[in-house]
Length: 173
Image (cartoon, rainbow, N blue to C red; front, side):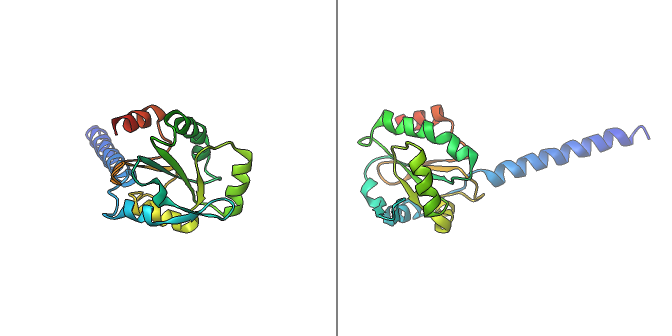
């Protein structure tokens, strides 16, 4: 009897460690498709009013692509910080684009209530596919991708961004 408890405890610790390892690797952003950023720049996504916005207009400067939804509390929570970051850097030095995984009507209503200075476009269900092509293998939100001025994916962030880390990453570009 005395020998079983230490053995059971050791087995429990081993399985807990395996679970943590699998969980961390499963939900970490993965590599983007080879042409992931090229696919992004080839898109023209509708804004909240339905006007097509070509993503190619942002080529040549760092772009922060933020996948979000109106029903996602961490997404909505990080938007004021992203908005402040856009104003801090200015559109001449970098551009944030918010791709809403939501309906056009929900995004339009959200845009009326919030004062977001960067473009919010409608991704809908195809936005989820695009986020997966950009490395979001877990399919979670919010998901943010930093594309450098050469069009190469520099970094990916799954979950609410840490604004100081994001600022450092932008300055490093």
